[in-house]
Length: 375
Image (cartoon, rainbow, N blue to C red; front, top):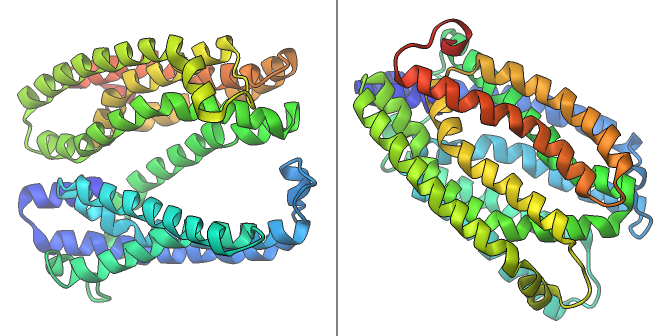
């Protein structure tokens, strides 16, 4: 919807924009209602203690936690569409503000509960973290559709499933890429816990959070690029696209420098952060720095390709990347005695991206992309 709504806005077609918004809401409600229904049927039969390799939390508590978290996770897919509308209108700061606000409110509520509650409640904690952003997106939706985006307010009359071919074909590609991203980057903790125990997850996540700082800042800068690329691409403004890519590549060099400085400082930061309770080996630190440097290098090209919607090649090598990831988990995960093996498995698919995405982007910018590079 982000791409299609940006195209409609670029053409000044408000009615088409409203149809895209209404149709997307209707489609997602149908899809994710079915997903949620299936999950709640299957969830009672899943042994989460085995999946997470833990005995410290009861199976009942894990069942409650997963039920709450997954329910609101699914609802968020729908209500956060208002954030996508702001992004498509080149106002990504509003979406970022809601995300930051929900995190801040969650933290405040958790601190209050820690002060006045004698014993922790995992299900309650999960509810706070997942419910807050949903509530804020609902409030933002009500406000936006009755003010600035009244002309985009969803309605049954504006639903046009004929548009679904364009929306869902592109949306399905993005959805598949999101699923692949989840498999590659969100299952790492599960594999680490299974292979090396839950304590190693803490070591991995400490290094991950540390080097995520420059990646997160870079992501905030890059977020508006997606819709801006779509807008410029629809208007055939390739001169702006080329200049923007050059500036972003210069910015990448600055972030590289920051990451290089962070490597020798890491031990001091970790000690200040958690004391002597957790030790992060230097080889894991260096690999995590490399992982985030690659992510920052790829960001301009990824947003450019997403903005143009030329995703067929990305889908194909991403599927190959998942296969390589699982092979890497089997080989390196069993070879190393810490989370280094899992991180190497994650880096393998990134190598494909580093090779392919810049090449495809440059071919499109030069108007020489053909075949799978242009699909």
